[in-house]
Amino acid sequence: WDADLKTDLDRPVDFDEMMKAKIRILRKVFEAIGKQTLDSEGFKQFMLEGAHWLKPYGLFCWIRDFFGTANHEEWGALGAGRVSEEKLEEMTAPTSDFYKGISFYWFTQYQLHLQLKEASEYAATHGVVLKGDLPIGVDHDSVDAWYMPHLFHMDKKTGAPPDDYAEDGQNWGFPTYNWDAMAQDGYSWWSNRLGWMSRYFQAFRIDHILGFFRIWEMPATATGGLLGRFRPSLPITIEELRQNGLESQINRLTNPYIKRHLLERNFGHDWFRIKERFLEDDGYDSFRFKAGLQSEVACKAIVEKEGSPIGYKRPEEIIHGLNQLINNVVLLRDDDRPNDSFYPRIEMWKSSSFQELPGDLQHNLRTLYQSYFYGRQDQYWADTAMKKLPALLDASRMLVCGEDLGMIPACVAGVLEKLVIMGLKIQRMPSPGESDSKFGRPDRYPYMSVCTPSCHDMSTVAGWWEEDQGRRQEFWNTLLQRPGEAPGSCTTEVLDMIVKQHLWSPSCWAVFPLQDLLGMDDRLKSKNPKGDQINWPPNPAHYWRWRSSVSMEDLMKTEDFAARLKKLIMESGRCGGKY
Image (cartoon, rainbow, N blue to C red; front, side, top):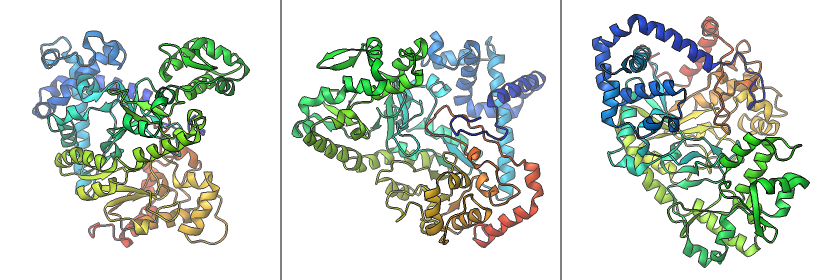
């Protein structure tokens, strides 16, 4: 059962058990051939070329296993930024007491290197390109954040503004990048990663490429995404607030707006129990959070430890109500210039703090909001991206694709075109101004793009078709140009038409999730399309447990299906004239 997708999955992958089993086997293999492998010329060359990441990685894994946690804040003298280069060399030397435990992880990485390299070379000989992935975030409990914390803002979290998938925004939990520190050595951290990736891949996708223009950043004390702001960005100044008659309202706009009627609305007639545990009087039927409790993380920890203060309400309801109070602000203060620079809270008009302001102040705030998000930033963000992205392009000869979905600044298209980076086109998520309907038109996509009917962060075509009757009807009548009522389930004929639309698109690449291709054949398509979605973006802890209901062995037997795909590829001119 998948709680986020609210459906049963077909034989989902249990990664925890899988990793335990593989590690047990690997340790037996290491005991048998570990020394022989470590003494081989191939491994020595691998180690010589990859020492910059292999040594910290091996030590990180060993310390993680020793403490039983990857949270390096619990590692004492071996915590983040506390292991010097000299200490690293000492602890990873062959004479070290820890060498055997550390070298096991080097051995494992070497085996992975050999296997992936072999697969890459085999694919290349058969005209198959491997496309790698460059995630936008690095986990807080990762070797990079532990060994090089100066390259990250460890007191911040990365995420995304509210959208159709997450009304409170997304909080991925990753620390944000310290680009100023990275620039000091020419972005070598990025160059090293991409240089190593190019050993195996001929192309790569930059996940959330918008993050290289600006990233949605929250304080580490946030659990949602509403208290985020774009970094870097040009703030609203104290002078602008003064000119708009808002200077005297700064405290009112930046502190959580908590009134008795809001407490009654959130928690009912027992609201005073919330007040007793979390709040204190602030005069005139107003309240403020007690010292140390004005954060989502702090309130959540108390509720999870002590339970619900109101017996008939679940802890989740209490946490949600408290988060609404914490997020009930209109402006956010800048960390470095809290009295001079400010940022509008995303979708501030949805907050009761905004709604209970006089009309003229609301109007002035909306004007500043519009200027902040859609006016003053474009050239600044374009210049910012042009400082970072060329270093990534120069690091290898791989073809670069950028996932440019979400709240897209107007400057992005021009920068990607200038740098010859392909953008992503998803039919159900057209970019602003891209289409005259709710759907993208594959026949109008630019050449420098990758087109696809769906991706891992959304339902498959069949899943979407069954969950959204209104949009499927519009799609049926407008994009597929079919009369009458759309079929209630996604037929193989529907998917065939959609796949053909993308294959015949001008886009340089057409990429398809396996689920969408299998849906073209009644023998192979999923019986539960809802369970074919891989990821649920609003939940950063969502496990990617999807497993194909069709085995590779059975797929190999459907020669007629393979021949059909080959025919479509040949007819659309996407075979390169060779295969």
